Length: 138
Image (cartoon, rainbow, N blue to C red; front, side, top):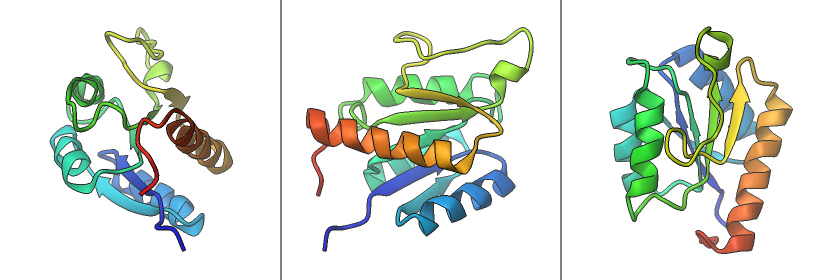
């Protein structure tokens, strides 16, 4: 039997983390949580997740953007698919979408996110990962 895919879930809202962890684990994924940008960067290297689910608005306004940029610049983490789940598009005057320079992520989803939509985004990210060989299944 193959190993479970590992998801790194990053958000400073513990209730959101607990809810999404339950959704992901009930669908067969292993979940590792981090509650800030520094924890994400450490866990991404230590845990080698298959996908990262990342919030943008954490302790500082650009925390998630900084984290995404750093992950893409690091050889060890650059090929991990990143799914942003954030409420930032609901907070005027901010409006963000994936962008190579400012927000180098694979998928952007607005909170509140429907569990099935997030699961579909995870499955699609894993499929692209396996298809393109960015990070083979272990």
